[in-house]
Amino acid sequence: MLTVTVILAVPAGLSAHAKLVRSEPKAGAVLTIPPTVVRVWFDDELDPDRSTIGVWDVREHRVDDGRGGVDLSDLDRKSMIARLRAVGAGTYTVRWRAVSADDGFVAQGSFAFAVKR
Image (cartoon, rainbow, N blue to C red; front, side, top):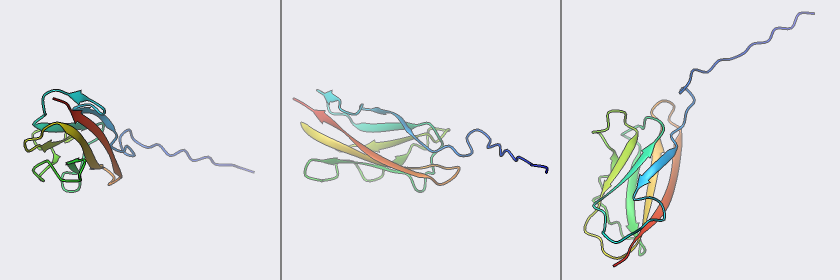
């Protein structure tokens, strides 16, 4: 009896999904100066049409300009940016949705940072 084994090779990156690798401000950061932008970086190219980012205060009021998304000045399309309105002391939650450009996989998450006076 002859047995044939087929090994499927998947090229690197073909099955990759975007994973958050860093943020500015960092998750859990306590800042003394309010940021004007929030940036997040991923390890895979993002779909600019379907990836989103936003920032909310503790009352669930949106504090960014509502136009956040993939940073089109990043030629690799691996980062997102949200521009903040003037924010004061408080705790803020960043929510992101990253859609991988290569396979459409959706990853989402959130993190918080605080501004103290």
